[in-house]
Amino acid sequence: MEGSLGQKHKPQEFNLVSISELASSSSSSSSSSAPEVARFGGDSGAAELRLRQEADSDDISFDLRTTQIFRLSPVQSVCISEGDAGKEKSHSRGVTLLFRNEEECSAFHSAFDKRKKDDIVQGTRLPNGAISSLKSRFDDKIESSSSKMYFHYYGQLLHQQNMLQDYVRTGTYYAAVMENRADFTGRVVVDVGAGSGILSLFAAQAGAKHVYAVEASEMAEYARILISGNPALSERITVIKGKVEDVELPEKADILISEPMGTLLVNERMLESYVIARDRFLNPNGKMFPTIGRIHMAPFSDEYLFVEVANKALFWQQQNYYGVDLTALHGSAFQGYFSQPVVDAFDPRLLVAASMSHVLDFTNIKEEELYDIDIPLKFVATVGARIHGLACWFDVLFNGSTVQRWLTTAPGAPTTHWYQLRCVLSQPIYVMAGQEITGRLHMVSHSAQSYTIYLTLSAKMWGPGAEQGGILQSSSCKLDLKEPYYRMSQPQAYPVAQDQQQHPLMQPQDLSIQPQDLEDADLMLQASPNSGAPLNSLIDNI
Ligand SMILES: C[S@@+](CC[C@H](N)C(=O)[O-])C[C@H]1O[C@@H](n2cnc3c(N)ncnc32)[C@H](O)[C@@H]1O
Image (tube, rainbow, N blue to C red; front, side):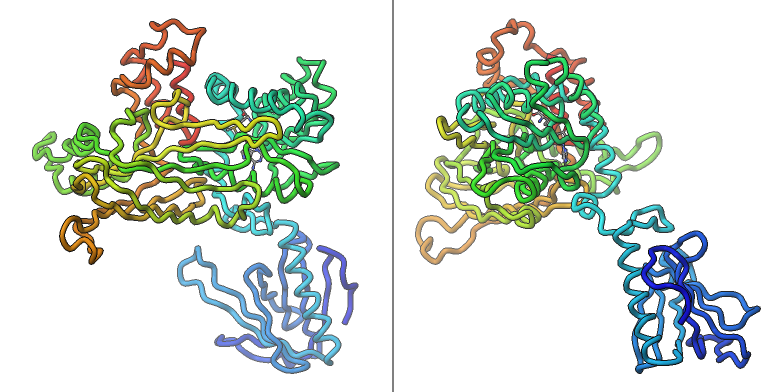
């Protein structure tokens, strides 16, 4: 054995008795007197193992990230590398290595393991450009294209402004902090996903000893500027640019504050970052603002909405579109429209049963529990109706020591930029008053920072024979929470009166939405990378 062990990315050599290729026409052991050499790391520092059978032969190169090593005997090992998945006709490759003695064989194995591990920790770039490493917990589960768009979106002041202009949201946070000064005064606070820094400034106003404002997007720079523009507070706030999954803080927090809620509470998957921040930064028994979240659900009946969604696919029923028959795609288009959850503010009188709720306790939920959320459904119809789907909304609780305050997005409550969400069934089901409706709402997270939703609603047997518990009718659908249909161009008769109360600075005429505004807003929303927050864009147009 030659060379020094343990120096990261410095070439490291081992002399061998023989190197022979497996399953190769050129398979042979060298008979030359020159030693056969196994060498880790090229001059480029690449994570590779190079094998030279003869002094003047070409090296056999193995990429350590795709290579495994097995010990066949005390002095013999086999190296197998995977074929290149990106290349046609690429095969796995193997070589047998015969060492001079057991110690050298063991040393080679240790060096192999260490090289491989070091490479993973350092995050070496793969040939396809992705990072192969133990990246941050965020990057491990989220596609880089999604997070790039996501943080680009939040890096823009206009989108932060839109959230700030949701006065129900921001006003409730302000009230929750100020009414619970005791939870902030003299305390260390972490603002998880600080955005413009507004919640950090609220915490400092409430007397926080120090606030760490963690923000991953370019908004961190604007937050610094905003905070230094408030010199009475700025000394007690430090902005840290980075993901909460990655950054280090100099001390633990007594309280976390965050606004991690997306459409249907869970969209954007930021709750997971909130929970990771809890585990990384919060003192035992520390507080979380918000503390819990609840998803509320109830079946609804809305013939207009159903017809509207179904009619969207009519375009594809044309048999002569510039001479082309489009009907072959009608079925797919129809399914496509029903896979979009509908986001709007609806009249709560459309609900046909009392709602039920599912609680997410941010103080003790595990991050992994947010990957797959499975909710059994059970309702009793209050009226006879055709059920067109499931309506959902959420609320969060700030469980302060002084005051408990809820922020709600319920239908009929003052409208927020989250509105409500409805999953529409392509096959409605019929129920009578008193009939039981069962089902399941299953939400499975995906790497584009959102969820696939599987919904089933069933009408249970009713009247004579009901005790046998059979299902009369059942309907299911699959939706992508990342691709909602923002239905804001419909008249929103019910919530307008509520809105006017909530926006005292606005005149009623300011609330009227012009068709052009809506078209523009709709386009902006469609183009937005993130289906959780872009509804804020509408506020611009109001
Ligand atoms: C919904 S906004 C809230 C902004 C601000 N706290 C407010 O209430 O106005 C969420 C913010 O969290 C940031 N964010 C999301 N995930 C993050 C993460 N893992 N680490 C750090 N920041 C994150 C986003 O860039 C965005 O600015």
